[in-house]
Amino acid sequence: MEEINQLGLEVFGDLNKFNIWFESENQTLNDKKPIDLIKEVGGRELVVGLLTRLKYGIFI
Image (cartoon, one colour):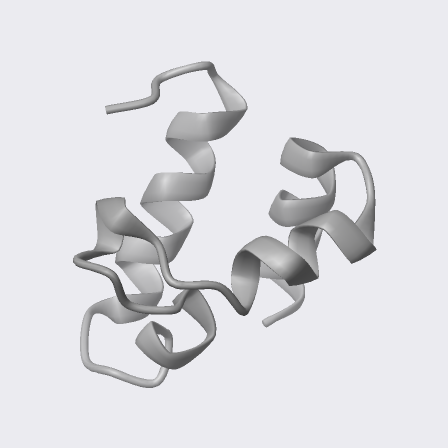
């Protein structure tokens, strides 16, 4: 979880903004919340992958 928080802070620049994103439904994740998705098999990788793409400006 620490890795995800750190990456979220890098992407959003603020933990509050990251937490709002983390706890909201996300269209890219089939309208699932990242916080719920990390509990599923393979979900953590999906969330980390999306955050990494956002970090580098890849929005698809």
